[in-house]
Length: 225
Image 1 (cartoon, rainbow, N blue to C red):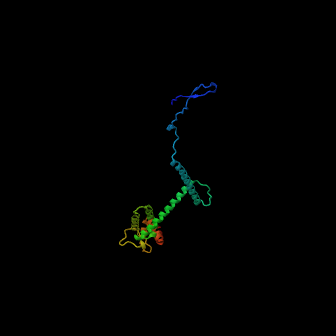
Image 2: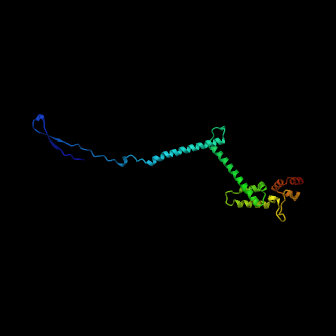
C-alpha cells in the first residue's frame, strides 16, 4: 500500500481577516494495477486451424457431389428410360459390379482363346478343333493369364491334348509309327474304327468322332444297336 505525506498550505479566509487558515491536502492515491493470470486469459486461436476447417468442409462437399454424379450416371446407363424410377444406390452399385465382372470374364476368355490359337499353330494343332474340345477348354479355364509362365503352361496343355487325341493335329495327320491306342477320327481317313471299338469309346471320344465325321459316327452308331 502506498503511504501519503500530508502537505500544509496557507490559505486566506475573508471572514477571519488576516489570520491564516491552515489546511491539509492529501494527494490522490493510485490503486495498484491488477495482474492478469494465465488462467483468466482467453485461449489463443490457431490461424492454420481456421484455414483448414473451410478446406475440409469444401473437400467433403466435393466428394458428396462426385458420388451423387456417379450414381446418377449409373442410373442413366442401367435405366435409360427411367422406368425403374428411384432405385437403391446399393443395388445399382451391385448390378454395376456384376456387369463389370462379366465383362472381365469375357475379356479373359477371348484373351485365352487368342493365345491358344497362336500356340496351336506352333504346337502343330488345329486351333478350331482344339478350342472345341471340352477337356482342353476346361484346362484352359484353369490357367492363370496373369502368371508369368502362362505361355509355357499353355504349350504343355496343347501338347498333351494333341498327344492324347491325334484328331486335334493340324491337317488331320497322324503321328508316325504304330498307333498308341484309341481310334482314328481324322476326316477323310480310312475307317479304322470298328463297331467293337466304337462300343468301347468314351463319351468324349464319341463326341469328337461325331464332330469330325458325322457319317462315320452314324454308321457305327447304327451298327452297334
